[in-house]
Image (cartoon, rainbow, N blue to C red; front, top):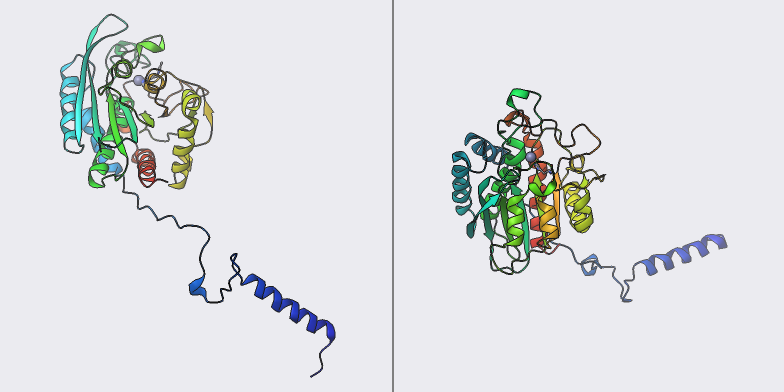
Length: 337
Ligand code: AHN
Ligand code: ZN
């Protein structure tokens, strides 16, 4: 059969192309699909444990049920004991660091920092923390007559602690293989007025007096006001200054987990919170996941330091976004990812 010459040339060139494409980089032919190897080593898929937002919510309710947790009061002491016994059921080691600290007004206050450790023998450690005490006054409340009454602090105090208690449960049920985690529940964070250093007395104390000599963590994540409806978490100035790489890691985990709406890549001003002292006094790079925006209203969530900071503003979707994101970070680290 007679073919035009140019068609024959195309056929020959086409066959050559197919042959070249079928050769692997080491020059061997790989027409058999079974011998085809992927150039990349496949990362084993991580099955992230579930963070149960219902349980986190219940852990906030339990704290609120003690009443206002103001340092030096009976509900404060009762809540400290409950936090200790609750964590003892989950963690490998629990200790309560106690001290007397002096507030801005000269009041001598009993401080209980509750510290729970998982895999205490591991040298690579991640520090998770939140404050658990509640503010002795409602200085931002509209009701002048109730400004000097303590707040119930479902979000400011309860939310970060509630999330960490659920993470403790997750860690107990799904033991980490390689890394260690320490959960710090800071006391006497919110007994401040005026200058920044009057806040965060528990974390300042710990940063100067570690519970274990030579304690080191690779990095820390602080949770503060992480439970309100419609919360978003922006990248806070001190977190950027001291731990940009941790912000990158946590925000990436938030986006991969499907919570991008909660973690916009937007910068906000620095604030004095527990992470400031962990960074500057303890030297552990630490970020703050906090609902804060200096451009809107009072900056924090609308009910901040008012009597409206109660269970009605807590949203399980927010708890889930934050808790599941932190869980993802921990199990990625454990897998060396
Ligand atoms: C100041 O208002 C200086 N820092 C915010 C720390 C804070 C208060 N976190 C919760 N309540
Ligand atoms: Zn506060």
